[in-house]
Image (cartoon, helix red, strand yellow):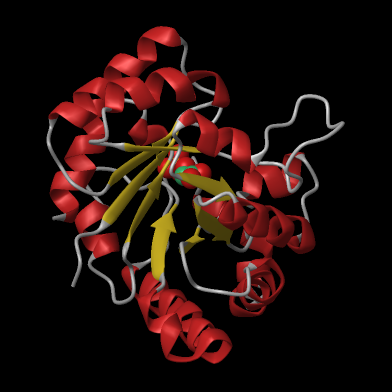
Length: 240
Ligand code: PGA
């Protein structure tokens, strides 16, 4: 199995001095560490990461350029030296009303700009309680994914686990990642085997090994615990 990919999502956190954390992450000399700081830090983060940590964006617009005040295009991210972009995070789906079609359009734009794209899916607590987790995630995959697997990563993030300190049981993680793999195989044929699936939602140094040890889990998407090099590197070390 390939080394787990550990991706940090800084969300709306970090002023200038925070790039020293990225410098420390880069200094650890680990492969497969990616970090998405806020747009404002990408330029500086790319410099201090010096290629040892891949820097990405947390969102992009679906258009290449145009009259979209306040937005950032995938081409702009690539121009700064970003290597990837997170698309369809539940906070954007909720706060900004992004639907699956929006997410898919952004994913296509990201691929066209040469960025790897992490497409996020995941159910709410109510949906899980209603026994609808697979139906919801299946519909999100069907509507959000681009047409080809090149540069595609899927992140499963149950909304109820994000920032809450709660996580699914290892059995539930295994079950839904197996379901996602089956959906990828159905959609892309054997090419679906190679698509990496990340788990996200309250990943910490003390639960990373268990969560990432489940079948079809190819890494983690980490929010709060990615803000310092100490906890992010501890997760990477626990993941192996
Ligand atoms: P968390 O966030 O690790 O703080 O739960 C995960 C995410 O939203 O990607």
